Length: 321
Image (tube, rainbow, N blue to C red; front, side, top):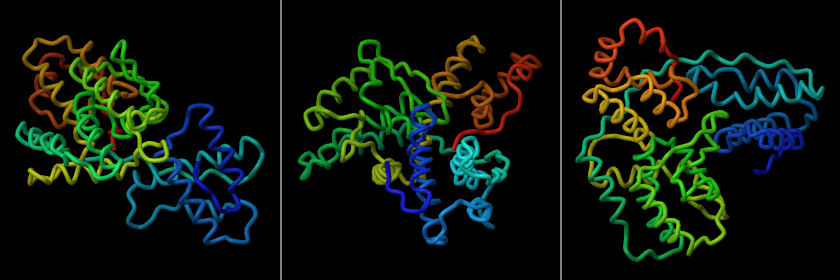
């Protein structure tokens, strides 16, 4: 747990312990935003000893150039913290309004086979003689980490925070505890990925024999989001000229699977449900967001299912970020 330095230190720590105990905690997002709120309080209210409505409203006010979704991400954990204090009679501060979620119009990069071959070639050709333990760990982890994203559709934070105890090698199943919100789910590995993870586990265990996280970082912790974006950027740019980000491997996984249904005479309801559950979507509506970027499939679905399709899967607010 990070160090908190404002007058809210004790209460924030209690809140985090409560959320972790009830499995309602996203360390990579919630803790960072709580730290920023804590530093804000310490910097602007150094002599204050009690949370006030003015402090909360000032922090939670949407910035002039801030989108609704960015504001939501920044203040959501603070609103939850205030709710926690209210339920225990520790404050009378009112919860601020959370801006309405906006549907994103972002269109992810459409990977080509050549681009993907170039990228994984870069992953596989890191220096043969690492000079430090961290470089050795990177050389072992990078090719496996990004192949796991590519082959499973995991969110990047799900892969980063995957624990050793949640990899079932006997059955080839991942238990994804730290997902978006509370949505714990399971992912069945492809046979080739299953074998690769086994080999990786044996190699990385030589360096981190008591690790907690499957892809370990220093101090027996997990890699931060910057580790993913930095490494992806370096390796992607080595042989490709287009722009892409690591999270788009998840989009590619969904689109590739959806496109494969077009020529199969697929059983739509079953396949959609399997994909939705595997990707950790809370409902089928979230999975439908991908159809907008797969026109060929959208037309086929509408033709084959018509009114029933729209009944089963209504319009959706995009949940991915």
